[in-house]
Image (spheres, rainbow, N blue to C red):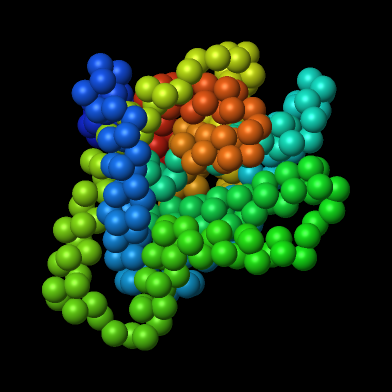
Length: 308
């Protein structure tokens, strides 16, 4: 347990360094925004392309693992939705809270941390989680909010969702990497070296950006934010673990990776969505901050327990 904590400590130390730099004003919000853009569009995309280019679709999409993750997410999503309704919140707010309860920071934290700690064999399962989060649940959020606000689904909605996914560099880089892999051609040495060099910047850049961005989050609406953090850090990995191990009989290593991915704190892009739609912004912001801080202690426990 101590060994795993010490392995994860450098990741959280860089997050803390970013937070400190942002807090004292040495790294202002404008710098954080540009660093995040660099990581999102270049460094992380290069890393994801490199992973996908060495895999087949079957390496990423394992039906039982996908079913287990979707089942676990669905259960927690339904619980969070029900809690929102019981508190008298409208559908738009309840669905944003449910989204917050199941979407972890897989791109900026999960990919670099879990692949580095658990080995390259974890990459396929981590990418599976990322794909489900980006395609299934982001689309679901858009559909439900559109339906709640407009009372109907426009014929243009599939095009809007499809265009949004195509413009997401994480989705595009994985799709292009898989397409390249399907050709059976290896990457030319100069291209491979360039992508590796660029991808190496993803881990420290993403972690520093996470920390710096947390200075913009406020610990408001603590009761609801605490509940959402509990749902994300405890209920989500528990539900995914139960589904993977007791229902769908997922390979033990892949099940462990799924559980670790589910134990990640709330993703920063949930705040972007909350701001975009103008829904539950303070609650989501606080949940990101609280879950990230608490995950310093909880994530090493989960990693040690299920991948040791």
